[in-house]
Every structure is written in structure tokens, then in C-alpha cells.
Image 1: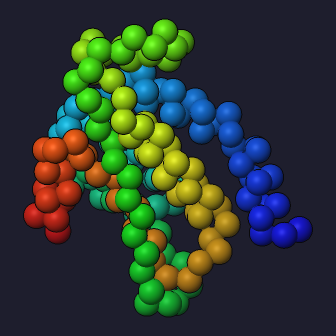
Image 2: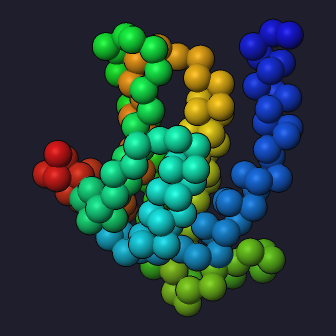
Image 3: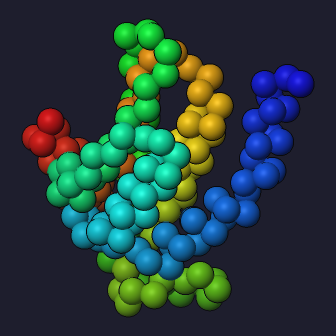
Length: 152
């Protein structure tokens, strides 16, 4: 089986899980530096898959670390988690349950995509080195990246 087919088969197996995660995050949007529920969901998922998890980075940011093999190479992949102060009128079954707050910029999707990659990489471990997954708070202008950097 080709690597391409392998990942497609894996995605087929977990697609409903990833859809549910995205819809859950979408239904529970949190503004910058208030991503407590989202951060907890991310941290627990990463722990379940064997990641070393660091929380409270830049207030509500999360970093997951997974090491495999013996290489000193490192890779960082980042997603943002915050929502916007917008009233949702989509009518979706998973619409925002937080009045005046909505994932209108796709950060629910970004977070879910990185969680999907995290799950796949933990399951297959087809890399040699250290993987750093960065879930950034407050991307929408409040300085979440700077806050994470300040925390090291």
C-alpha cells in the first residue's frame, strides 16, 4: 500500500471523529486569551495520543511534544484557537452557543486539522526527531504569539 493510500484510509477511519471535534469547537468559541475549554480539549487529546503536553503557555496556549527516533531535527507546526466577537447567524446545527462569539475565521478548522495531524503522527511515528505542535491563543490581534514567546 502506498503512503498516500495509507493516509487516505486512515482519514476515512477518523473523519467522523474530526468532524465532531470541529463542530464541538465551533459550538463553543472562545475569544483570545479565554480559550480555556479549547485548550483543555487540545491538551487532553494530545495526552491521550502520547504527547508531552505543556499548558498555560502565553496564558491559554498549548504545546505538544512528541519525540521519535534519534535525530536532533525538530519540526514545529502551529494552529490558532481563538474566535471573534461576532454574532453567528449560520443556522448550523453546531452554531455558537456563546452569544456574540463565533469561529468566523476558521480557527476551529485550524485546531482540528492540527489535532488530526497530531493523531496521525502519533499513530504512525513515521518521522525521526522532535515534533512540536503549537496551539496558539489570541491570534486575532491580541498578541498571542508574543505571549507564547515571552513564556519561552
